[in-house]
Length: 229
Image 1 (cartoon, helix red, strand yellow):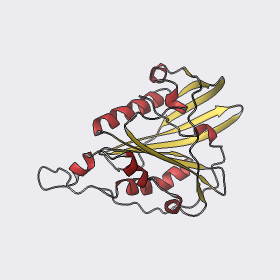
Image 2 (cartoon, rainbow, N blue to C red):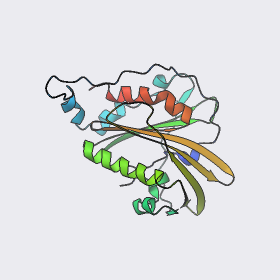
Image 3 (cartoon, rainbow, N blue to C red):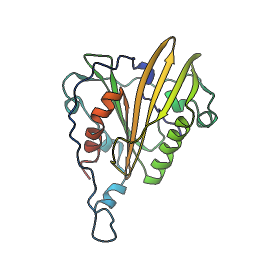
Image 4 (cartoon, one colour):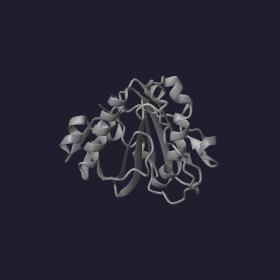
């Protein structure tokens, strides 16, 4: 299983301070519970897989994020040789797990945005598959990365020091949550990226980027991704 854990992480600069204010309102995402056995009333809908076309309509757009956000054009896939030093578990998954791959789930959609007044970025990825496959796939990657507090990735001949820290889920949303803080250092510069993943039934949401922007827009992204259920 390959996954781009920090989407466009190497292109995000360390200027993470000039970010917009966010609402502190939190949408209640507690699922309705059916009378029989406590089973969620929308369990069948949550287990239905979504097509790539359907996922595309559930991505955030600049109007959802607020003024000052611009959508980034998708960059062509790169195929540099990637090696991981100092983390056997991550190396077994493939070096692309840090910077170059994508999840191999059948249905996927992604978008990335810049905040105009700074170099801060935020990206969103949506995937759909069975709940078991989503849980196992993303859980395996997060466990491997946070299980190695430090390692080094060599991509295209460039060494990148990576430090990872497991974070608590921000609050109880969806069925499962994962979160981590990544620091990428190369050529005397460091970039800090927060990544939070939420599985809700057969839908997996991954939000990555400036820590403040991830905290700001996570609830909004999940609400739009699951609104039609």
